[in-house]
Amino acid sequence: MDKKRQIAIFTTASLPWMTGTAVNPLFRAAYLAKDGERIVTLVIPWLSLKDQKLVYPNNITFSSPAEQETYVRHWVDERTGFKSDFGILFYPGKFSLDKRSILAVGDISERIPDEKADIAILEEPEHLTWYHHGKRWKIKFRLVVGIVHTNYLEYVRREKNGRMQAFLLKYINNWVVSIYCHKVIRLSAATQDYPKSIICNVHGVNPKFLEIGKKKLEQQQNGIQAFTKGAYYIGKMVWSKGYKELLELLRDNQKELTGLEVDLYGTGEDSDQVQETAKRLELAVRVHPGRDHADLLFHDYKVFLNPSTTDVVCTTTAEALAMGKIVVCANHPSNEFFKQFPNCRTYDNDDGFVKLTRHALAEEPAQLTDAQRHELSWEAATERFLRVTELDQEFTRKLSKSPTKNFMSTSLGLSSSMEGASAYVHHVASGFEATRKIFGAIPKSLQPDEEQCKELGLPIPAGKRAWGR
Image (cartoon, rainbow, N blue to C red; front, side, top):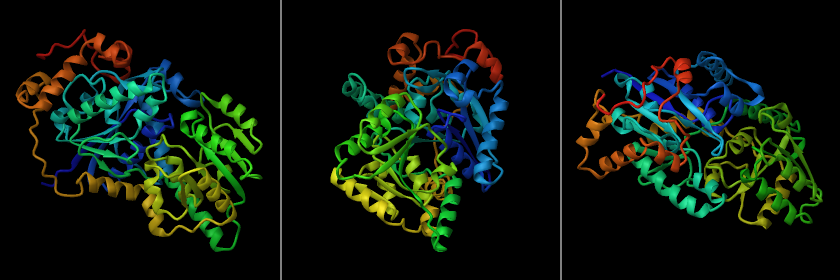
């Protein structure tokens, strides 16, 4: 009756990797737990030292999960301004060099004991379930909510044989997400469409950026020039993150944009090529290493140029708006949420980009209202999440839940349904090393290795687990 809901948030990355699936689920955990009305656990990947060196920046590594947990908690508490009250668990992961992402090893649903398995949030549900081999998420948990972060199809289309790969990936994603999730939230219409999914931006802005925006608002209200610099862009320096589109827009409209100066900030695989391309322009385009967007260096820029169309909801756009800047971005589904803010200007073509950029540099940003600032916050994002998942209402979902039974017995019980049969096929296919390899799984990732088991305090598996156990 008064029993608190238990929410487990599974995600595909962790700090200090400053990627969206590390940062946003961390904030979600902090704000869902803030009012004390629910028990929240964040479940994040643990990497071996070899993989940590490949993934984490500035030579940061951890000798134990406890050491990384301390780092994560300090980071989020420093930014939210309150002591977070959620649990952290680690699951074994391995870094895939070709996918540039972390993949789960073994059945990560086991990190939550059956008696505490109530609600699961899968951040990037397709990513977490492509190679899942274990208990069926929908059976173990009463409610499974998938939050789609990434436009995988757009990235794949840019690769060799991209159209065929995207065609296959679309159906694989639909398959695993329908098998394993009761509800699916798409952050914007820029993601792959999923049956019965809901479009809602359930992400907020790091509170630091709202604080910067408040200081800029005070300067504006006191008649002080708040923004003394011109235009900039910040993002991981790879062509697919908007650099290709931005440099093409600048190249094709150099005469119309005479006198424009743009600073680009980022670090990535394509840094050298971006720098070479920028040098060939007549405009003053300066390329700098990546920095934290909250750095004092960025506070005085007035205009954020972001032509990227591969994002689902661009974090840096939200941060720029929170700081009170004008944002010039493409008229694209990924930017739909931002259109409600007066400082968001969207263009459809080159002429629109030129016109909006010139106007933005010539005028002062509109002053955000309290309501507009709230809409960008994690408090508002949490309210939206609870509303669309209906977790703000009396929890009445009645799903069969058999915590002690294994996948085999559950699947047989559901064999009459198409979904049960489909889940059974995925379970069987994902249990063979040869099949997993064909579809891109990391070799020998069915179970964690001895080193990871020791580091995480997990029992060391004696070969493949028998189905009957």
